[in-house]
Image 1 (cartoon, helix red, strand yellow):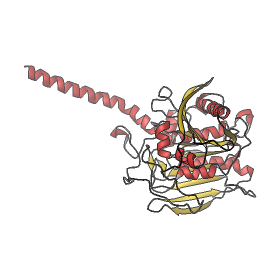
Image 2 (image 1 turned 90 degrees about the vertical axis):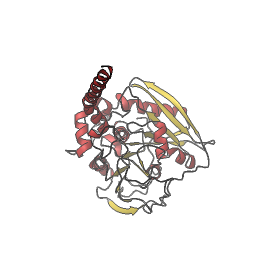
Image 3 (image 1 turned 60 degrees about the horizontal axis):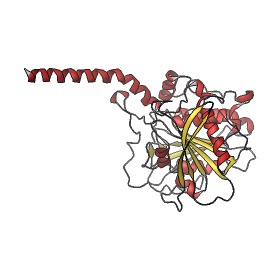
Length: 380
């Protein structure tokens, strides 16, 4: 009798757990699509995973060599100096977020560039720093690196809420928090207000695009990796659609503060994998289109020059450059389409999540692009 009761109880418990899993499935699907851990995996298969399964497991990051189009060497693992990576917190009227700040070793000669790095969903500053190796670059090219941290209270999967109207405004939500954090670091650290840059992956890339529109005077250039255009979605439902199928109608630039045209012709560099199953590659194209709608009025060409390339023993890519007429400094917009890459940081380190070591080095290329540009240094 006791054995029979145990059997019945075990069967009931198994059925109850299976029912609970089915009830939770729509939510798991939703957050998988909104997260940066998504891949070609079916939502019904459970928790999302890294989208770099097609990349072989390598003991070290391959040397991508110089990129012929830009003549910039790839990031090396070793650094001659190691700086400090400290935790801090910032609060203003819009809210509060923690952050990590990397300060390179040694006493700087003059003020340093500041690069703001916005992680993707299910990531944190430590993970993102490891995957992008931006701190190693900061030791070689002295600069400060700021990693704002999203909270699980604000988003269960630590996504920046790029799809929320409230978080697409200059004076509220996450753009106001991040901008205030940047201004606080500028006031406390030996940072150059004319060389402040922002970049991000996935949800972080979408938030970087938003910041370019909400606070254009604060930044000198922006980098968007596997992200979406400003205003691409207004809620969760529209976010799911644009991520899965790409943007619908052309995303026109919105008005910035004081009615001014947004982004103030901010230089832009975009990376996207053409095998991205989480954020459709058309979204990268839309980020470029949105920027060109603004910078074309400032003398940039809408016609790009495509430059195909190949990482030795790695992935092929197409780099399309949109220049400014009569300007000696760097291009207005660069679009890197990495062939065969999924939803992952191109050329990243396997020590972090969502990286594709076989692709061109997005970190080195973004930094090369950034340092060609300066802003007026006004607070945004």
